[in-house]
Every structure is written in C-alpha cells, then in structure tokens.
Amino acid sequence: MLTAEHEEFRASVRAMAAAHVAPIADELDRTDEFPARLIEVFGDLGLIQLAVPTEYGGPGADLIATCIAREEVARAGSMALAQLAGETGIVVQGLLDSADDALRKRILPELAEGRTLTCIAITENDVGSDPAMLRTTAVRDGAGWVINGAKQFITWGSLARYALVFARSNDAPRAAGVSAFLVDTDQPGWVVARDNDKMGQRGVPNNEILLNDLRVPDEMRVGPEGRGFSAALRGLHLNRPTVAAIAVGGAQCALDYAARYAAQRETGGQPVADYQGIRWMIAEAATQVEAARSLVYRCAEAHDAGAPHREVTRLSSMAKLFATDMVQRVTADSLQILGGHGYMRDHPVERYVRDARLMSIYEGTNEIQKNIIARAVLR
Ligand SMILES: Cc1cc2nc3c(=O)[nH]c(=O)nc-3n(C[C@H](O)[C@H](O)[C@H](O)COP(=O)(O)OP(=O)(O)OC[C@H]3O[C@@H](n4cnc5c(N)ncnc54)[C@H](O)[C@@H]3O)c2cc1C
Image (tube, rainbow, N blue to C red):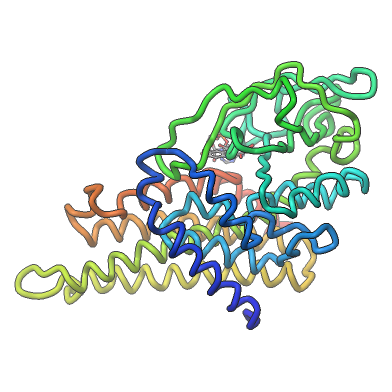
C-alpha cells in the first residue's frame, strides 16, 4: 500500500530519529525539558508542518506520511517526541476546514516554514470528555472578542505561537454556544500558569493556561460564531490514526528491546527466549503490533483515497482504541520479559510503560472512542 515515495520518506525520518531522537530520549524523560533545537531538525525535514498544503508553501503530506513520521519517531524510543511530527496538524486542518481565505493566507505560510508550534485548547479543569460543557467565555467588544477562562492539560501550551482556543460566545446550549479563535499567544492575557508534572511522555510541555481578558480580533475567529466545534472535529478525527501510529512505533520499540534482551539473558543454562512462556509473549506482542499497524494504515489509506468522512471517523476511532490499548499490553509484557532489570531505570522499558499509559487517555479517552464506534455500528 505504501508508495516508493512513502518508503523513501520513512527511511529519511528513521535516519533523523536515530541521530537526533534515540540518543536523547532517556535524558528528556529525566530533565523534562524540551530541547528547542529539535524544532529546527524536525522543521528542516518538513515534519512539524507536514499537513500544510503545497499552495501555502508546505509539504502537503498525506495522512499515511504523517502516520509514518510518528511511527518512526516513536520507534526510535520517544513516544513524546513523536508528537512533534505533524505538530501543527490539528490547527492546520481547522484553518483549512473553517477559516476564511484571509486568515489562511496570513497563518499557513508562516506554519509552512516549520519553526512555529501550535496548540489546541479545549479541555478545562472540570470539562474533558464532554467539551460542549466548556465554560471559558468570549464576549464581543467592538471589532473583536475578549476571552476569559482557564484551559487545562494543553500540550505545547508554553511553546506554541498560535492556539486554537474554544470559548462560549453566546447563550445557546452546549456546542451551539461555542466558537473557535486562533489566538496569538504573544498577546497579553495568554498566561502559562503551570507546567504539569506528568507520569510519562516527559519533555513535551503540558500546561495549564489562563486566559485573562485576552483580546482577539474578529478576523481570528475560525468558522462561524457558535460553530466552533466544526472547526476542530475533522482535525481531531484525523489526528487519531496518527496517535495510534505513535502507539505502534512505541510498542515495536519496546518489543524489539525485549526480544534482544531475551535472546541474550540466560537462566537455567539457556536464553530466556527459549522458554515457551517468553516466546509466546513475544509472538503475541508481535501479532498485536502488526494488527494495530494494519488498522492505522487502513484508516490513513481510506482517508487519502477519499473515503467518506463518516467511514474515516469510524476507522480512526478503531485504530486509536486498538493501538493505544495494545501499546500498554506490549510495553508491560516487554518489562515482564526483562524481569527485575525491567523495573529499573537502567533500561528504558519502564519509561515505555509510563509513556504508553497516556495513549488511551488523550485525544479522546478510549471509552469515548468506544462510544463513537458503537454509534457507527448501531446507526
Ligand atoms: C498529557 C495530556 C495531554 C493532553 N493534551 C491536550 C491538549 O493539547 N488540548 C486539550 O484540549 N486537551 C488535552 N488533554 C485533555 C484530554 O483530552 C482529556 O484529559 C480527556 O479528554 C479526558 O478528559 P478528562 O481528563 O476531563 O476526563 P473525564 O472527562 O473527567 O473522564 C473521567 C473518566 O470517565 C470516562 N468517561 C467520561 N465520559 C464518558 C462517557 N460519555 N462514556 C464513557 N466513559 C466516560 C472517561 O473515559 C474517563 O475514564 C490532554 C490530556 C493529557 C493527560
């Protein structure tokens, strides 16, 4: 299913990740500090800006390529840094789907350069899985809007130049009252209140953001007033297979490590890889990884071939559900294969277990993915 171009692209990302990601993956976990130089490395390969169409100066990558990039970076040992590939994807998709021509022409060429990070700010402390209940407000003020509220768990919040912020702009119930705004985070009123101290995927910032009388001109509204979620939905749906691709790469990385270890570690005068219990664990893990990979690329291929969005949504939730549950099993089994050594920080596998734990929580929990899939089946 992959073209020669895709294979070439995979090889270039793999080489970059071997040189720039693998050597720092453990250090990133320990310091919890994002190395800013990686923006240049990823940006020069076109990875941050993958989704920006060629007409705006971007690489115009398809969804398969984004999945490849994320899988390869995760496979090099960092599920966290895999998020830097395709980093602007959700915001770019939102702009393409809902922004007017002037806003697209103003922002997309800048994003195409691969030096600008973005974030998406939906979640609040009291509102996650049911975002239609969000409380942040946007009040009209002359030619613009004044936004007040607090956003929680925002990935890249402290480094993003632009944020797609969702706020309640009228009294209509639930989603009908919500609008989307592209916020320039250099504006006063965008306040990084907290660096969240995460269990895993450390080194990629995650922040609480306060929006204090943040002024946004009306030209920065993305989509019609009260239709904010339609600006985000397609981007979020299309991001899910790429999150699943991170899970595939992360699981492959853990399995490869455990298999190498099992072939060398001896007990009872034989490699532990010769025990049936260990062999079967490896066989099951390899099968699970391959099954998840198939689902990820089946979804990406369907999208790139122009399948109806409803079909892509169903597959994207399935890929996210299956792959992100899978990576937790495979990393846990990989740790088990290393025995006591796996529990120690001398090996990266305990980090893989911690990194994997996030995967079924963010980008819509797996319970929410099951709700989406069940709706599609029962429709
Ligand atoms: C590291 C990290 C990065 C994140 N990055 C971002 C980001 O960049 N931008 C952003 O806006 N948000 C981000 N999030 C937020 C993330 O999307 C939410 O945490 C997630 O959607 C769940 O919301 P919640 O934490 O409020 O859990 P809750 O909604 O409170 O859910 C609690 C539990 O109830 C279950 N549940 C809730 N509703 C249902 C239902 N209808 N059916 C079945 N079960 C249900 C959930 O699955 C979960 O198990 C991030 C979160 C984390 C941890």
